[in-house]
Length: 311
Image (cartoon, rainbow, N blue to C red):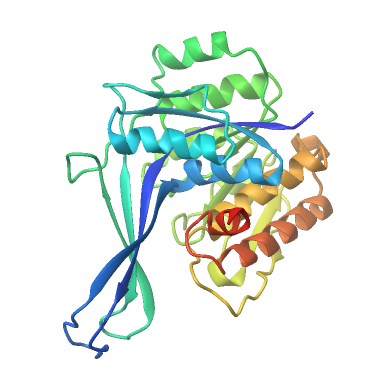
């Protein structure tokens, strides 16, 4: 039987744009450019992981409350197209849909390749995110859930998601928290408390004093091009090097491939509780995850490697 992952948090409709300079590029100047939309597809961390996991052999069950816009409907269609079970994805007038535009361009002052991001929502210049409510929706969801997922993944420290994490953890589900950062320290620490695995970027979470207070957890800290490191059960940090790739096209989805492949490896090897983890099996799974992430950056778009196989 396929292992399962329930997911909730941030979903977006990602638009990938490439910028060209028909008259050439001069550093420091306002260069004339044209833009081409390369792809428009479900994205953001939770959206990407929910889409990649089925490709890696893990059934995903995303929970999302989207609006009735064309873009909101497309996010659900895309999740289904990539193999996710969308029974918990709903479109309604009370939902929210975020649009994320990623532009690949050259830096004005250096000329090097860079990216810029702009988040909006249909009909507004501000993003609109809608999470499951803790006061009514989350308890009702847990009461109606008729299976125990092997893993619960969430990427936002909102109260409703923390409630799901705590309740699922009581049922034996391995809880995986991957925040964008720790801007709201109180929410962040509450989410850490109800999780088994916490993965974060060294650029977004600088203060690591909380790690030593949780000897029952696995912490994964990404280090950009240097790879990552992990601390299991209060032990010292163990480094896992990145895998070089000389054909880099788009690195933005690499972290989501790392997460997805790591989850798939945990499922394949039945490492679905902290008691089953040790430094060696976690290192092996993270090495496999880094290798997969390295391959993924040779393709444009977070699911470019999957799309290439389907052509």
